[in-house]
Length: 256
Image (cartoon, rainbow, N blue to C red; front, side, top):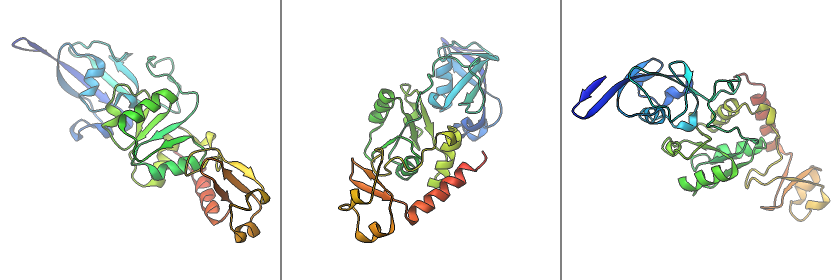
């Protein structure tokens, strides 16, 4: 502990695990390190100095014991910070600040238009607009219980966000695999049930029901059609469908 005029600084020891290291400076990654922080200081404030969004964190231990964000820190405290656990049950350890969502629904920022189409292809309700503002994304997320997906670290710094995830991958295919693994989505796949353009649910239609919406050559070659009443778009199982089906099969069979 250091006394500097009227300011008291204490030493706090941190250790951040797994993908939370993506937010840390290189000198702090994958090891324990010490920061001097001015008192009084609480867990949430201490973590904020590291640049890790609270929405990325699922478990905080102080000296080996689960702690709330408002826990007041003392000199020499050891903080262990863990990301969301998808494959282990840690309900007995977790503090209660993060309520589980009943349905897996997303809202994506302006950088993730291509990923959005893929998530809709798998049947996930995913909102997207390339002109969504940060506050609008946060408000919709809270109102509709949606997980925020973003490539913008600053967006996730808002203390209002309860469910958010920073996507590390850049390529759309890798982003999709990352999300599927992160949120353990394979058992929730409902491929080709949602419009990739507008997110609305698709309705099966017969050939006779889409005569005015599809060209004659397509009507001759295919019998099954899927219609979006919101954007008036028709889908059928052509070559594009086969490529997407192959992609889905590859992802479903992939190990973490």
